[in-house]
View (tube, rainbow, N blue to C red):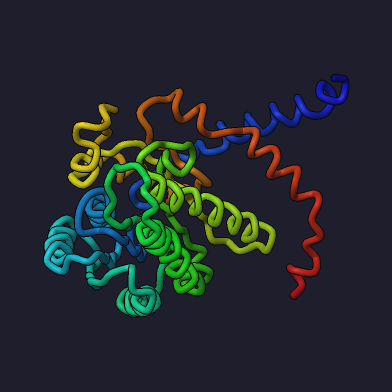
Length: 292
């Protein structure tokens, strides 16, 4: 008990203060003016709304999704809204050769990259898991592994620009939900992977920020169709959600939450995990990794 009073409680208070009050820098739209941004999953929903917000802020954009027709409409609207430039490259993230080619083409179109927004997912429905291994594999490949592949391809450009990565995740990647086991697995994987490499970047002094965006139910057409008759939770507006993702990423926050209430965000932030992650760093000898 004395040990807790002397060491653990002060550490806890310091971390709580840092965690909840260190992200007070004010967002300004001009932060995105002239920035070179990739948005995946941009033909509809949150991705499309992010592209429109970024266009209004004067960013250069390359958007991607499977629907060529949908992307053409998004690019046209982005140019009307004031984008510094806007291009699309259609393709599927199920094709891993596309991910590397896409990033290279996008970099050439914009002359570099400042922000990578990873937003795409594979189609999924709410249903009990019935031993459907191909469904699990598809969710992991599209919702997780393609995010890793895109990040690897984009990292050289992001290092040059001291850029940012937005990883669009979900409450389903923080707490367990029924009926979405394959989807939830892919979102938990995003947290594990990107939170881990964020630590590695910090230790290696790689000035590329990673913002894990934890979203609740959003009123996109796809989400509303999937939950119809099953979930009655309030669905937040996609336009506001898209803007909050951009703000959190521009401010280089480690995590941003767009969920249905303050208390939900407060409870899910888990300061205990933050403390344990900090303490665990003292057990590593990083010299052999940093010097190689």
